[in-house]
Image (cartoon, rainbow, N blue to C red; front, side, top):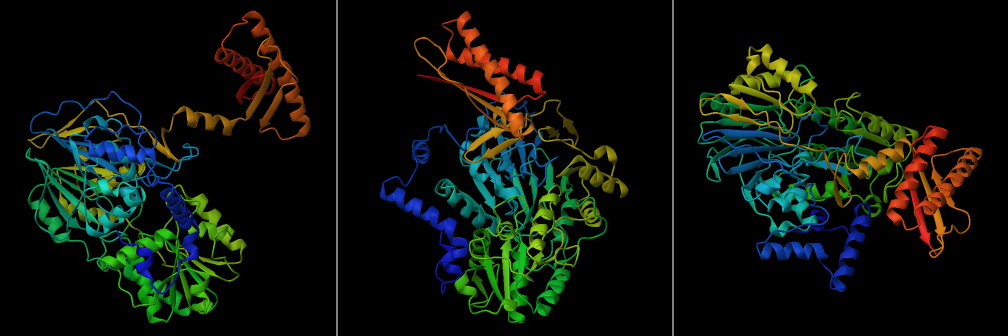
Amino acid sequence: MKDFFDELDKELTWDESIGQAQEEVKEEIEKSEEAGESDTAEEKEFDNAVKENREYKPRTLLNFPETKFYLPTLRSGYTRVIPIGWNNETWAKNMNLFQYEDDLLLLDCGVQFAEPDMLGANYSIPDISSLIQYKDKIKWIIITHAHLDHIGALKHILPPLGMPTIYGTKLTIWIIKKWLEEARILSHATFVEISWDSTEKVKIGKHFAVEFFRVNHSVPDCVWVCLETPGGARIVHTWDFKIDFTPAIDKPADLWRIWEMWRRWVTLFLSDSTGSIRKWFSKSEKDIWESLEKIIENHVKWRLIIATFSSWISRIQQLINICDKHWKQIFLSWRSMVENVAIAKELGYLKMKPGTVKKMSPKATEWVAPHNQVIVTTWSQWEQFSALTRMAEWKHNSLEILKWDTIIFSSSVVPGNERSVVWVINKLLALWANVITKDDSEVHTGWHAFQEEQKIMLNLVNPKYFMPVYWDLYFRTLHKNTAVSIWFPEENVLLLENGNIIDLAPDQSVFRSRIKMPIQDIIIDWNGIWTANSHVIKAREKMMDSWVLVVLYKVDSNTKAILWNLKIESRWLVYLDEVRLVHKMVHKKAKDVFENTIKDVPDMEEKDLLKIIKTDLEAFVLQKIERSPMIIPIIMWM
């Protein structure tokens, strides 16, 4: 793949606002290549396994927990639907499984914000541990659009499933390629590009016939999916959508083709419940355009910094057109923003005059008056290293918030992230910046259909069964109530949880299995995969709720006598007198436990001895100060 950093803005040297972290990565790669270590041992093993057509057993990123679950037998002519991830999740790790006979097809593969109980986790991914044993039958995955909650887990999911073929639109595939390239597995991936305007059905495997429909969302090239099987099932899945008759880049949703599906009879309709809480219609991008233009045109003091998601290509096109009209200069800050803009420009989704958009750096902004600078930066609410967060903390390597700068939050707050957003706003206000959010002006519109748009789609598709998807049961129940309000039969609304199994019969009836696929919260913690209830998370919970106490013994290897005083370290105790008192009690108790245990069983193995010390000290501390710390005894044999 081309180096889009250079292609975007050839007249500039390397961008310092993006470059520090990237340069460090390049230096590490160059050093490893000079040493003949361009691939890690794990990457070489993966390459060899693919070449030799044998199973690859990973050690770090791919070690999903083992499971003995088997899918129940699917009766002849039935079509199976299983939600793997999307329900009861904030910014869901979207994934759905469809089955007909021996063919299994996945739809989307996203990441989720780390929940508060996922201590120390980077993010969560779909639990495919029950599916790895069926990887020979899972040969395809359809991706509806290029948001992280639909593509972000691919680098973790593809290798253990044997690299199934990826279907997606042009922009979606190119953004996925960039992700897989960084994960160093792009060379093993296979892609099939589909068009949202094609009326032809795409044959996937022996049994699936799939149509794609044009819809509107916050990133171009989004599609609905209509899936048909020989058993007579026709399933329509909207994923994320809204109805916008004046979008910034895309054409309006193809409502005519969507209505035509009703004439062919839709068995099951799965639709986005994210906007269920909001009445009427979502705002059009045209309204946001007018509001942003008014702000930019009248901004004549200091800099204007606009924070949005790097995938919001249509919003960036709006800003390009507005700034070009009013003689403003756009500067892109942060890597993901530069990459996505560069890809969209390369593919023709973004139109711009030469020199209108540049990469942010002190050199680039040196000769541009502050009031003519419009800095477009990333705003990721779940990432502490997003550009705007670094600016608020004065940690950005090339941009500092100055007094009277104006920051526009051209994005909505993901439910559950309100506190972190307010924290960033408070930091910016403390720097004397002016902050504008969608509550102050129309600088953002929602990505998802409101209640009236949901009604339009239900009426157009007119399915026999309806399944609200996404978010908590509260949102999905509101979507159900909206359907019932337009006379949809309540008994035909399916409210499923992740792992529930339904089979669609040839006679259009639905069989709900009592068997449920086990779905755990799988978290990515740096280079490891864990379950959210693993010993690692439990240990972190204990450290957070209580405290840590380390007791170090120095023991004579021959006599097993304790040498010198015990070394005790604790974290959580605050006051000096308290520390001294607790350490004194623990010192005496720890010494007594060790000496009494060795006296009773002189030949006790070290692991058993440590277990006894830990158990006795936990009971002692709980009795004395009503706390259950994580106690770590250590023995150094001298």
